[in-house]
Image (cartoon, rainbow, N blue to C red; front, side):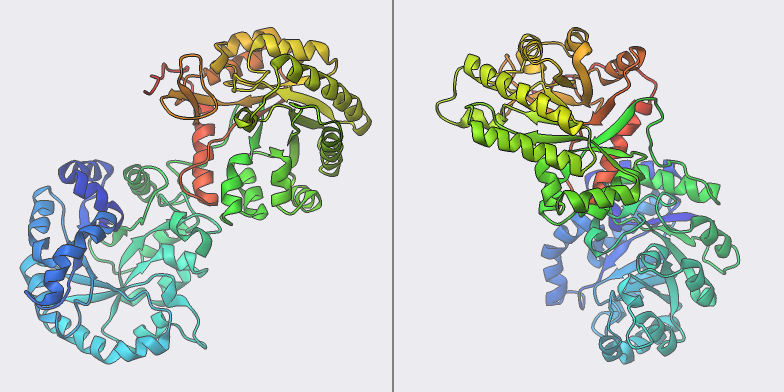
Length: 578
């Protein structure tokens, strides 16, 4: 069985490097291409002429080729050794004003199948089109061209006991099917059951995979390589063996990728070839001995924009093989408060490793500071959390006028951190502070951290592996000199860039957080040192939010972090970006 690919998801790659992309597809095991061809009215008509202006935007995203130039594209594809058996019809190519041209093009290009998508959820609306569509299917048949209907999720929407897909199957007996198993799964239906029901009419299977739990809120980010998502690949392949499919009966149709779509295609082909129960990629989970917790504050953006809820946050944690988090006090409030968060965590076996609270001690406002400490400790107790990290010097304070002297800020911090440590003992909560990346504030260097720690007995240190870099200190040297006070770790990697920001280094460049292994912090060597020293505390994953929002981009991004620790090679020399 040949495996093809639809051009929808690879349109941009083909525009940027046509021959190079085809070469990579061939190396991945793809032997056929299913182009999308745009028909926009009679040849030379107004709609056809307008398509010359509108199609570049469509093509950039979707790999759509206007019929006026598609012939040359077909020839170029075939010259590279790929076959073309089917073409996905974009636009009204089956309507009266287009059908003659569509038939002529199919004959010129030796196309066996035209694929048509309605993406229609209303049987009533579909019924208005059915007479003209039936006549079009008949005419195509007369000219030796088979019409296949391609489903999205919309066609499976129940409309009083029937749906658009079943309506089409009943009303147009000559109509065959290109079944998209991914959209069937997305619609909440049984892929194999649908395959059996329409076995005699399915000619091509569109292979799409979607992540478990995909729905309207995650529709644009739910796609993944075949066999890496939620479709029952083994059962689909087994059922396909009993079907009368075309010689290119498997066509990959991945709309988008959170990483490299070419890599996803390679993995997809491998998984299909290997068959039942095989995953070429697998879910990335940490395989080392350290206790990892996820720092969730980068998801605040997603929560604020309603792209991430508490249930999805819990799923993200557990799907990554983790069972603990570091969470900021105001995050807890955003997710509905301590009681709601704690119940969700208890129900799923997740624990809050460290609660983080910003309590400004810069100006020594006695009442506000004491109230802040009390509130944070009460929340920690409600969340059954035994560690509270206090941020006494908020970064944004450097923008405020009349900043006190460093000596005054340190004195204030020592005074109130002593009170916090004493109060923490009553609540059974360990108090700690973290080194800061802002040189204008205390705690940015080894010397300043040592000064405050020496003045506050019982105070712990949350060791951030990058925050000392702006002050000129080395991450490993920082660890060696202060490891006796370290009770928690935040594993963070950074790049130095020419940009604006608060984390300004002595050389004028700014720190920007990045995925582990892509910056200048020797994360793996630090982890090895922690393991060698028998460190038994938790290490927070100082996570960098992905560009796209929602649970699935975050899952993919977190896998990138975990994959770094699982690799065996040492830390590479990463060039500093100008």
